[in-house]
Image (cartoon, rainbow, N blue to C red; front, side, top):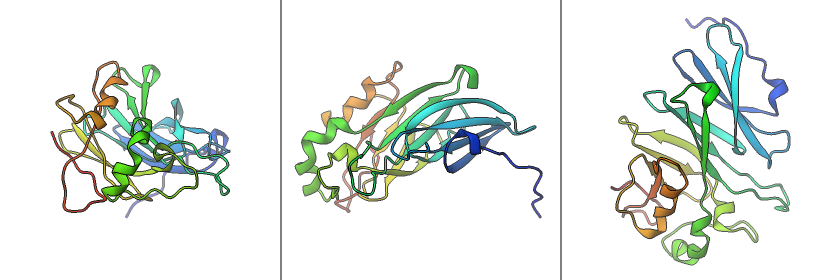
Length: 208
């Protein structure tokens, strides 16, 4: 039977702790800001003594996070949930935390979807659901969950309100222009969004 050893008190870090991931002796906790529409953060703890060892800023409402299998990167789904009256509607995004040089030297790249805004009609014809009043596509997309491939080269990001599955890949390649923009937002050109044809019009899946 599992035995509770101790508790991490993250109440001083913000509002809710939405997700926890562990790799080796590193514990990562996604914490939303006190104002949900503001950028949240990821706080890192040592699993041995549960002391805080660092933090990085994420996007609005970090809702789920997961390590790659080698522990070199941490991917964070930033839901970007709007206020109840939609007066504030942050963009959904995915933050990629590079931990290859340790927590103290961690860097963050946040990938959004603003370059798709001009193709809203085309994507809706393919089955993408967009319904926020006055919202752009980037504002309406709300990343909820991330699954990473075993080789760590791709990640699928579920958008709970819209139902597409865009994917992130660690290898830049010959991509449709619609998705090529992400490869230019990191110094290593290590991220891309890629679609592929599926039987479901509202789904985006992987492709090389």
